[in-house]
Length: 252
Image (cartoon, rainbow, N blue to C red):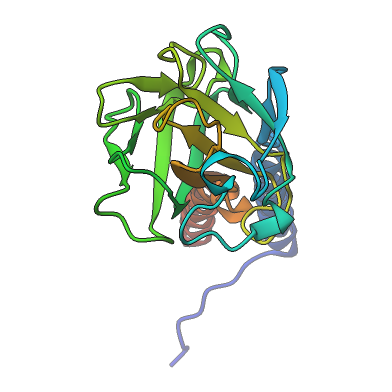
């Protein structure tokens, strides 16, 4: 009895090997092309427009100067530190983020010294209260995803005083109120940018101590792995399809 066997000529074997090699090479080229086609993400930056220069007042200033409860001088920011402030005369100016689309920022409540109950809000983007000086705890943090375009790059938040007056980043700002910002830092909170935001509610007369609600704003970087995740899935899909094609050739 002669056993059944399947024979393949050297020509067929060589042709199949060449074909499969071509498929493998094409798969590698396609995968490399897909990953190479992922656009480089523009680095997110924070910046403060030119405004009025001032410093956080020292203990000899009215109401004891800059002295919010809970403050620990992060990044060395404290009495005597330079700030840039904005008031009712500086519409369209303030803290900006670039690029202006699809950003993620982290807000942290750091302290207050105020008789009023002040709040901070996100404007638009399904915005809600960030912090309330009557109920928020020092160190409370909220991460906000801004899907879409941020108008003029102005980070869309504002402060409210219990008097009904308010101060929006970029304006409008009620008379007697001020928003101020520290220098921009690259630190453990964010290597891409961190800034300290100060609210002066105009209470107790215009004392301009900038400590009626203080918060930190930091850029949340997008992990590089997420940028490649979609292309990675597409590449895996392509390789799976090539394997199916290879199996079909072997079955012939």
